Length: 360
Image (cartoon, rainbow, N blue to C red; front, side):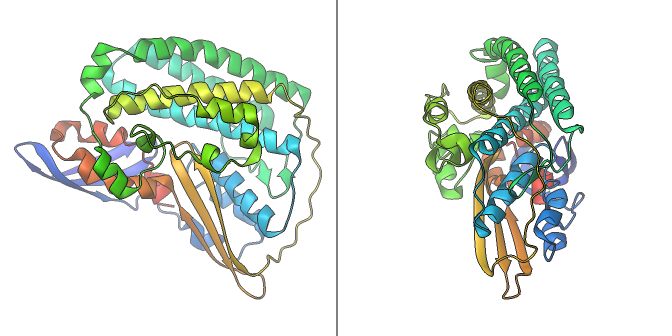
């Protein structure tokens, strides 16, 4: 049987083979949101890539833009300031909270708990309003460019972020209290899309799917970049994770809730540092050095990798992006096998994959 899959993060068709109404295997038929972004970006000058690459995934656009900027900065030996590094960290952690919130809204909608979902919508709107007040745009703006930002970061921005995080933190504490240890949610999600350790190890999972298995390969910890190298931030990230033993949809919900808490703590630390940034025009060479370059970053869903191959003339011959969804989708058959067909969409939603990332 075929099911049209309409999610917050893209469209697909699920071709399901089942026995006695339980899933035996699943194929994901994609291409509804294909944009050929890597092919379009090949040959563009460095700044020209940003508007395209940040559209790979609408809830992670800052992450993809920053990853690409870090790649070009390494290629051209550009050293960024401590303030810029911290500001980028703030943007990434705000977006991580936003992306996680969208995922929680999607999943908890199945459980029909309007009080929790209402709080999550309030968090979502607070973060979008914060982005809009800082950048002038709610979603895409190409704020990040190699070597800097296109905007000033002012004391008013700092205070806005501080107030936003304080408000989000109060709401999130109520949400967490309603989710962790909730017997009803445990019964709904506790046996949905269970991932066993042997399957997780074989498919090299990333993000919250891997964290639930006890394998903390978060790049912010294992290979810290930007201001994640700060001892105080590393201490926040390395704190124990309160997870159930079983890697199920419920444990992944808890993993995401706890990760939001860490993001808010990181931002609260960051806004007490020197974040004043004056916009300045940055002149970049349109010719990149020849060779092969790669950059990794920890996005809300896990590790993303951007690679560039340039020729002798400095022209970008190939740009390649491996998203966390490209990695994690490999577990779909193992995770969904045995699931009742009627729960297929909920089970796939719990995998936290983005069809947009795969249809780049």
